[in-house]
Length: 252
Image (cartoon, rainbow, N blue to C red; front, side, top):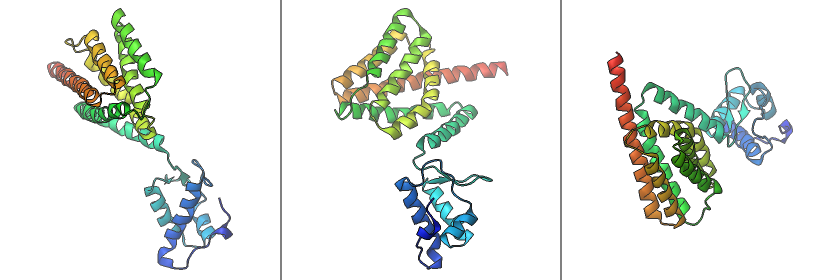
């Protein structure tokens, strides 16, 4: 934390909290206040900056809105700049709670997944990204699981394939977002793969064709196949949810 004497704040009292914001924001963005750093108490900051505790409180509210600090009752304010992983983790918990209350939200997850993964294959066919080895490894894993009728192994490789595609974009935000939802997506894959009309052979071919289109840099073809693959999974998911609802109705 910088020394109090280093802060030169204008004396326009209506804007003193903005000056506190500017000073702390500069220190956070420059790295002088690193992620995880606990800020002094409001009274200490008030003394350091020569402003009222009310101005400090207003400044903290703005910094929290900007995503630069986190405030919790009974704790000192913490610097959380670029704390995307924690934010996404919290988001994922919220999404899981929604699904627990109403399985139909899983269908909405499939819509979001289709939007993300369709754009992912678009990025991968543009030539600006390089497919990671994990994509081919996951596809090989699916092929082996298909040949041995290893249901659990196929699900694991299936989920790994989609995750590796996202990671291949080298987009940190996208990867963190998808990582936090990957557990839910794996569960969806597990549920939809149990619909009798879908064989491991058919599922493998879907993924192998997507991979071939990406390698050939056929954007339209890759996007169409990815949309179809996820739409098929969504259809299987609806069947699984309907079957579960019917079973629940009989049990009641």
